[in-house]
Length: 192
Ligand SMILES: [Mg+2]
Image (cartoon, rainbow, N blue to C red; front, side, top):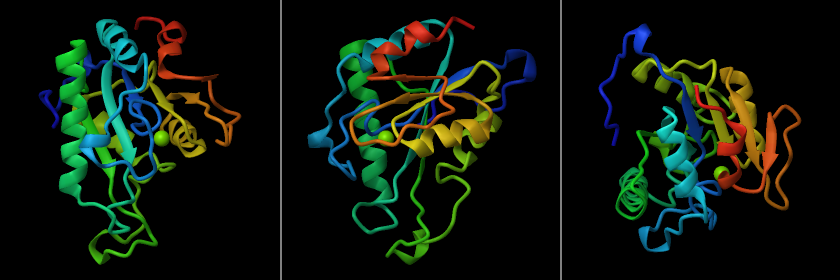
């Protein structure tokens, strides 16, 4: 899914907006994986387009423990991500630059995906891998997510966290801001 050349030299480093997927880009129906149920959240595509125009790489970092729990396959995660990207490109003229997801969980039911992983948020592994792959400048980068663990991941990775707070979610006190949707984020993020 990654569409960019890897290994950018330091003088070409760019900041990124890291994005949690479910509940930020698409509606979260709980272990979301069916392409037929893909619903973009209102205003999300518009916000992504603006952020991309300002020079930010757009990188999805998503926990997908449903793989470890035997609810769906990595192929189904890839298919959903591809459909999300296509929807953004075809209908809104924007798109995601790279997708990272963590299929592992320490209490899974599928042996090959049952383990502790530094990629699982709140650990910062996915952000740090993307930084390595694309030469991302973490200073001036952001992570937008709806869960406490998304913002904890931002803190551990050294990027600013913006929390999309829905009813029932636990507020992280170290977020830069708390918003009701991704559509509010461009107003908070100056051009790099
Ligand atoms: Mg989420």
